[in-house]
Image (tube, rainbow over all chains, first blue to last red; front, side, top):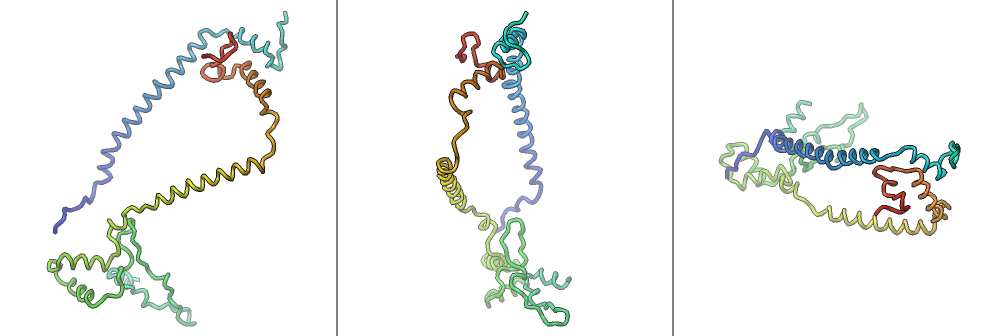
Length: 77
Length: 169
């Protein structure tokens, strides 16, 4: 009958040696993908927005629209 | 204590023969559920007792034969000895069942039933919605959000074209 002796030890080590490199590389890949798909475009969007941003103009537009409670609408002076 | 441990190795229900004396008032009845029981568990490979407690004559003679050299046992006898000690092999006890199908079916059914309950609630329990949900009010809210320049970089107001007063294409 004699069966082959089953695996008695080293199972965790074997599993880790297989899965840890995969886990680390996938995590690294996820981080890199997130950086270049999300954070870089976002930084660029903010940079582009503020390149053409006129704060005073925006403020006056908001004031005319009447959303402020402490600034009167209509240009005084 | 040591005696019961030694007997446990053979796997007999030795505890059943020990008596529990109640401080001079008599002997307590030993309940069945207080004795060690047999369980097939992957996490506990050696149960407390053998599966077969009362051996038939053939099994008794097999146990006698087990006392001698194991090389003289045939494969069938080895399997018979295994089946005396254990009910199911690891392969049998770990065999997947189809129970998950019933579970998932039950889940879906109850979720669907919950849908009916929600519909009934909406009709018979809840009152009218506040006036702030009227379309005109919502339009005024939207205009106010655009005036306040909510999320002008990537979000809400970024999609509004302020020159042409419409949503950006």
